[in-house]
Image 1 (cartoon, rainbow, N blue to C red):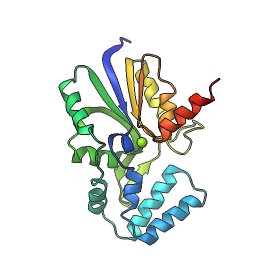
Image 2: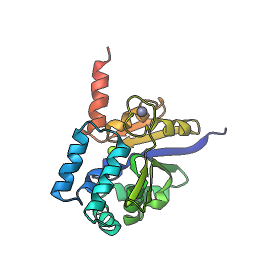
Image 3: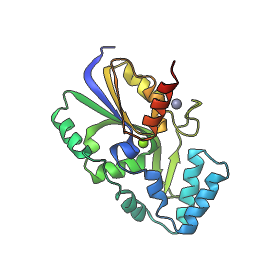
Length: 213
Ligand SMILES: [Mg+2]
Ligand SMILES: [Zn+2]
């Protein structure tokens, strides 16, 4: 396959493009008791992301929260500082950059945020947990789980990024979280990793580097 002369910018979503975690933001529409029930569910040893989502949405249903309320809440999430400047830069340099999102979040939240900031045009592809508006619950989420040991509770971003490495000579990966470590670990010498300073990915990479002889 002919390699692509464009540079791929692969973005994480939560706390990279935005300044907030959409899961935490979604949870905040619940009453205090609802949030407590959700925390207890998680503390009960249930780490599975898909099961957590179903619990969250069933609690929303119990509390009569509708999609408009949830959407308004998610759309209070702000972009990270200078992100809209970066989007403007990408728009005038489309012949140089191709952009994708690799997120462990769900597609409905991502699309709501991109809609709010008119930024959907920036990305050629979004790889995340697919979500649709449901009848039983507000949102039905399909957890795209992987057999990666590090990412067993949610999707592994590495499997998606791998397919782009074959097509792009240069990839810039931009992330903040521990789930960005897996994709970051397959970057080549020609690629670039941009980490949010003092966030979990930054700390994890520094820890791994300090362990090297
Ligand atoms: Mg993140
Ligand atoms: Zn992984």
